[in-house]
Image (cartoon, rainbow, N blue to C red):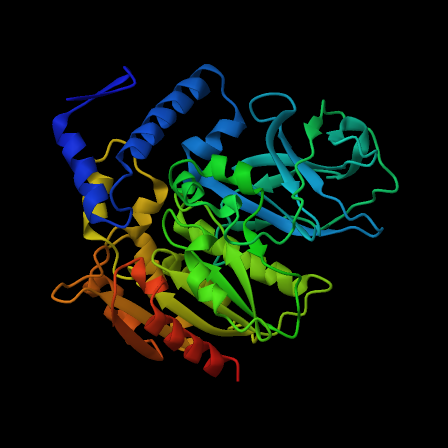
Length: 441
């Protein structure tokens, strides 16, 4: 038996399932304590919701029934500071603040991850420079009926597009909310990969506590320099428990006169279809944003990130692949899923949402195979193996080379490397640069 924080007595059989899961699957070893903390937190959240129902708690308790709300923002005056978005609901409590997100400059779009319901949006700026967003510094809000969040219909993906907002810092108003939030603007908009901001511990946080990661990042997309329309954007998508720093070796050798690295830094514990939908929505919004003439984008993904990226590309290709998408490169991605996760989903007491999607035979994977992105975009599949073994140490070759994906690839490259080592091998890097050069012609 195993006792966790004097709250739960875990049967030995369940403990063995958990230990076996982390030793043999994508997450690797060393995660058992974090998983048990996730279990404990979920139990506490459910108790808290039972005693004091709040919409704020539903995003953590039931992420499968939450959806991304995204939309465009324009600021017509020369305001260069951050903006705070406050999302408010009356579902359980009058004027409950469900989410607060600081939108770092330059502000072009807003985003929130919300349970089904009706919401008002408020926007604030630190106009007096006192280091706080105050109630009398509201520069925009919803007008008329609240925004309704519900499961999107049709094939639009699990993202809700909200109305565009025109914010006016020149005409602030007083809000009916008791708001006073410290400004947390990043001193450097373009954060280097070696910065503590991208430390590996935040990847672990994103797997087991997505809300905490989002509190840290306040965003999903990052770059190392100001947007340059003359360069090809190489958009990197990390894997499970990963961060953008995972790609440092590949990024360090890029020809920065030709390529501009961007990064999708997402909580890898969230449902993958929704993460893919957010990635697709970001690219669509970026294409619609004044000042961003994106002409060449290559998506590069590692491990589970390949599933997230392919989901996004499938969504973008439903009406024909956008002309700016020039290629897709994946490294050691489990396109066939992970059989051990199927057992974990059945046996584990609490399931991380992304586990369900990576489990072999999951509805998410079956939907992934029905997409057409791999046929409509140049697709290069890099896979790893260890000599004498049928895997890269984490993902089996059978999964990496799932036939419905493998045979759609423009070309495949195999290397005797580990699951993590594939991103830090010189032969892999030189081959990757050769592929990029071909896609950039």
